[in-house]
Amino acid sequence: MVNKSKTVELLAPAQNLICAKAAINCGADAIYIGASSFGARKNAGNNLEDIKELVQYAHKFNVKIYVTINTILDDNELEEAVKLIYELNEIGVDAIIFQDMGLLNSNLPDIELHASTQCNIRTKEKVQFFLKLGIKRAILARELSIDKIKEIRKNTNIELECFIHGALCVSYSGQCYMSAYIGGRSANRGECAQACRKKYSLMNKNGKIIAKDKYLLSLKDFCAKDYIKELIDIGVTSFKIEGRLKDETYVKNVVLFYRNLIDEICKNKPSDGKIYSDFTPNINKTFNRGYTSYFLGKEEDITSMETPKSKGEYLGKVNFSDKKYFTINLSNKTKINPQDGLCYLTNEGLKGFLVNKVEGNKIFPNNFQPNLKKGIEIFRNQDVEFENKIKNSKTKRLISAAFKINENEITLTDNKNKVSYKIENFEQAKDMEKMKQNIEKCFKKTGDSIFRAEEIIFEGKKIPFMPLSLLNEIRRNLFLELENLRLKNYKKPSKTKITPTKYTENQTDYRLNIFNKKAFEFYEMLKIKPKEFSLEKTGDFKGKEIMRCKHCIRRSLNLCLKNNPKEKGELFLVDEKNKKYPIIFDCKNCEMAIIAP
Image (cartoon, rainbow, N blue to C red; front, side, top):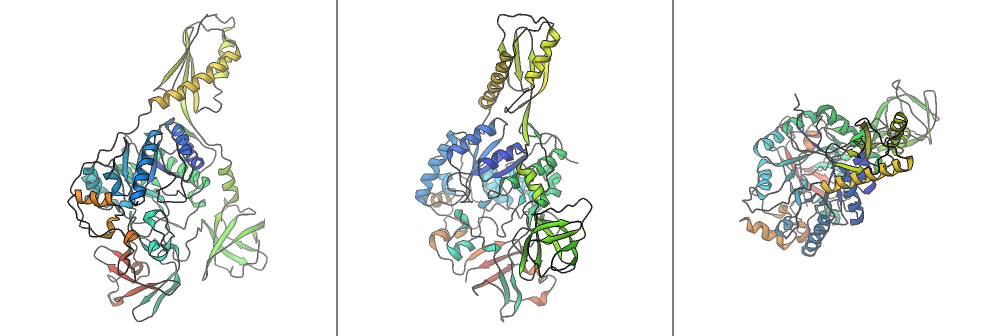
């Protein structure tokens, strides 16, 4: 049974100010967003003016803003990043999500720090290390099981943040160097070229092709909806949705889905306001490669080897097809519209088309589909009607407020904050009932404010006479004053104070991701002697692990040595340029590693 007294944070991604405000209105308790630079999604940067506007908007709802400074930095960039953090702190940002340890060896302002998943946080020892350092929150690796998260929670009291939805990196975060090796675009520098979404073949040492031209490293998208109850009871602090490159409709749909789900389970929320939505979210209708709960629970198919693209929602199988149209078995509630995007899998990958028209159960593609045979599974990756409904949605987040009126003053309160208007030169209304009606009608008009007047209470027997123009002015001013008071009374998290502690892991090589002098000195301060700088700095990739994964190609292709010991032997990943990458299988830990040739 879930402990309903617990509070959890729903943390939403934002590509920009528009997406961030949409996420807040759909129920996010916190937003993570990139600044102008140094974020792990280089193409999702925002200027200080937009972030300041976002902070002002968010804090009215008690929503927190976290900014990502989670790339590794060279010496010059480190200085620029510190300056940027001061500027972000000045405009009221609540916390910085970091990766580079050089920041912990810098003179930072009074701001909270969260250790990014890019810090490769997947053991209780690593979490304890960050806790002893003084870090407020650790963002856990996506690969952890429920039991592993329980173990970490049992042994630490640090805030824990878990991913619950979105795209999956096949490599442990912060431990992927494949994009940097292939084309010089480092994932640790915010420039990942998504090498894991490309085609590969699998070859044995004798040159035999075991799997040809498949997306062998491509995973389905993460969906932890069936584990939210368990994660709340474990004591997870924050539930994180991936997607800082996703658009506004994606953000609205996914955030509202998890807001509704969390509210069903756990009534207490850390942020304020009630969501008034005009659409029903459906995560099957938004971008996805098929869903997996990954390693949270029972073993399942986690891969998307046929395509790295979005398939969307499953509609049914083709039962008739000719050159003009086809039919599929649809449920009674499913409706297909012109301009919907449909798709299906072939030997060449995902094929898609737009619907030209629909006549009864006949679907007419906008062009001939020669591979559309009976029995083919059809998916919809663009539901025009659903997307338009979200785009045009007027979903709002409003804070309950109450007016109280007596002969001396009018007050407006949200239960935590109160503002008032003093009535001078009191003149009693001759028609008390009509004056009541006028006041109620006027004060219920909340306009563009963030409030909803739930109660209008008249105290005492006397009601002052006030013309409509004055009532409108009083209402507008009180709403504005209450908004400003909420901002004034907003409490930022306390500063993270770094206390050097013993480093608990044996890893001292390039995987520490040291890219600047201060990071090197930081580890020395912890009595650790790093062996080398990061691969991004040295360029010495040959023979090194450039990716370590919980995903195992052997297991996905039913070649696991635990079940098929005869399948023993070296395997290679072969790219489209015929370059061979040796694969090492760590069966003890059920992991695999890709090696740079």
